[in-house]
Image (cartoon, rainbow, N blue to C red):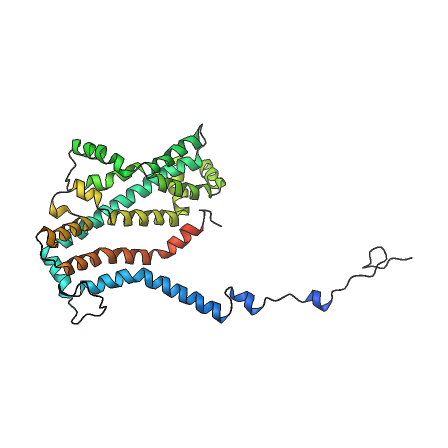
Length: 313
């Protein structure tokens, strides 16, 4: 028996049938990812409901800021007339412009300090190999379980001894971030571990020292993560009330949350105020809107920073 080309052991060569040769196409139902019209309608209703729950407090706040004293707490979303002069009055009765500048300055300093310091410590844990590295890293993470109230009095005593209470440089509000944050160290370390180690070895061969590798190699490749950390800390500093309440006494040095607290005390009827909370609502909108804008502009970095592990393809 002669074996012809294309045959194995004398068996006839296999030929592709029309079924085998034709690629299997996904059905339209498989392509959509979401079920039929009913499932899609339910999905959209769920999204709309969640959206309404999230934006309702802000919409109510904006509406209340445009009312007068008598109607500030009713549930009308479109008051008539709209009192836009409430916002002008807020700037007249309190140094809100100074508070805004103070908040921006403190927020940028605090966010920049904690981002760079946490990135430096995180790079050390990710790149260097030293004895008990994991144990030391575990101790760093353990500090997150320490309540902030525990260190409140010692922190005040330290800044008071240094003469920085009510400082015009706002030192107690941001300088502590120069010592990094355990949460941000953990977050950035995960990104640095995702970077190919060959990149750092190549930089080392070119004569770069560890600090140069951190600045020129690690930071540019983890830009999204750094922006996420910066925005997180900017928001935390922007809404911080406890530190300004303890360390700042001069009204001209107030941040926006501290100033808002003073307005609440000023207009509270229980403390002798006249109950004109429409001005408090207007000040609350002034505090909230900048963070909404910042999150809107930085949302793509949140998606990129949280969805990736720091590696670049």
